[in-house]
Amino acid sequence: MRRLYEPEAYDTANWPDSHWRATAPPPPHCAPLDVAERADVAIIGAGYAGLSAALELREAHGADVAVLDAGQPGWGASGRNGGFACLGGSKLSDAALARRFGAAAAQEFRDFQDAAVARVAHNLSRYGIDAERGPDGEVCLAHRPRDWTRFRREAEADELELIERADLRAAGLHGPTFHGAKIAPEGFPLHPMKYVTGLARAAIAAGARLHGDSLVTGLAREGGAWRLTTATGTLHAAQVLIATNGYSSDDLPPWIAGRTLPVLSTILVTRPLSAAERDAQGWTSQRMAFDSRKLLHYFRLLPCGRFLFGMRGGLSARPDRLAQVQREARRHFELMFPAWRGVETERTWSGLVCLTGSLTPFAGAVPGAPGLFAAFGWHGNGVTPASEAGRRIAHAIAGRENTNPRLMQQPPRRLPLPGLRRTMLQLAYIGYGLRDGPMRAA
Ligand SMILES: Cc1cc2nc3c(=O)[nH]c(=O)nc-3n(C[C@H](O)[C@H](O)[C@H](O)COP(=O)(O)OP(=O)(O)OC[C@H]3O[C@@H](n4cnc5c(N)ncnc54)[C@H](O)[C@@H]3O)c2cc1C
Image (cartoon, rainbow, N blue to C red; front, side, top):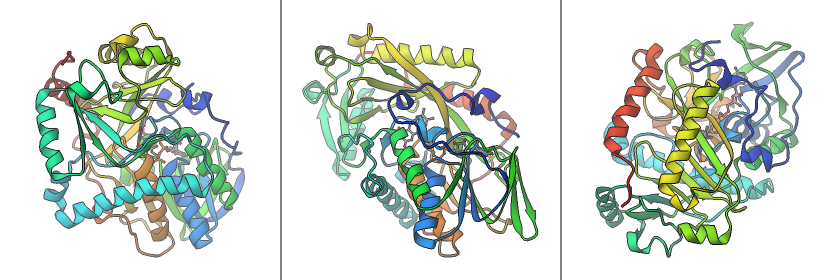
């Protein structure tokens, strides 16, 4: 299989020891695909996208659905992310989307994002998933005075709450590198593993067949249908959904080659902080937060009192290189939250997010391949859009209209020089790092 990173990134025998795995009941154990099976629809990938599609195909269309994952449900990014259920999905700003696709298409995508947040909230209540939902709203912290000036301008046009630097401590959002905050009302934090496990259980209860430890190594047309091959079996289905996101292979199907840019992200979680430690830093809010850098940091206080801190995860999945990046993340954490320098990291792990050559997500039919669909490219913000796009693509698979935003139905461009994607990423990191400037106290 042709993949961008070292084999360690895709080693499903090794499920990282994340905070989420340590604090959630294990997901349902799904047996591998055995011998030969048939289904109306085969879904590759049991994360938010694949499971949401499976649920909709069962609940709304009564389709016979089989979901195959190389690991167990939630093994990919869906079981190891920051748990920010927020707006997002593209790397382009609203203004850039409007320039490229027109104002109406940009608004349609914005409406989709709102629906995606509501979808996750609805899933939690509908399936009785206790995913430790936290307070509404997402905080963006200005890391330079000029970003604070920009926030003030934006607040005139949009529904945003602003917090001056002097008031950050009272708001429980203080750090020496922050120049002020803007708070968007949408979104909420959750326990990502509990959420994906809840979706997997709901999909099984709805009648979907889930197969774990079933890496699909072959996808070919046979007798007017698709034949999926794993180490232990085959699955024939008239329709197939590729929902592999950052864990995609460049040859499954070959059409996807060079259209994805999988990117590593890394997270550390501290031991529980005492109330005195939280007060000493001035960070007591459980709202999800990130800073205004291009190479952003994302962080939040968890309901258990631990602190989660994440950032880009480097260019290699080799264990020594991951360890190096995790040390770098710790250094950034200490610069941004100096009162917690002595607070130990309890767990740290990494995973793959997925960008596309168009910087917008895709949820549509694969051109020239009858019955083949794909949904991927959430640009590091997949909790909500993968949940919603998975639902909507199910209708297209069932022969109805694809109600995903028009801009998400356009196949992503192929990246130039796909063989050099990691080198390009390295250059982008250098450029963005220079643009962001050094980390220093406000
Ligand atoms: C460290 C980290 C932090 C993040 N933080 C956030 C956040 O706070 N908020 C947010 O919105 N998003 C966040 N994301 C991104 C978000 O987790 C993803 O966008 C989302 O989970 C993608 O869901 P998915 O279902 O599309 O793919 P995934 O959950 O990645 O699932 C893809 C699945 O496909 C399977 N697969 C791949 N190839 C094959 C094959 N050939 N055969 C069988 N199975 C295969 C994999 O095993 C995997 O389980 C983060 C991601 C990471 C890694």
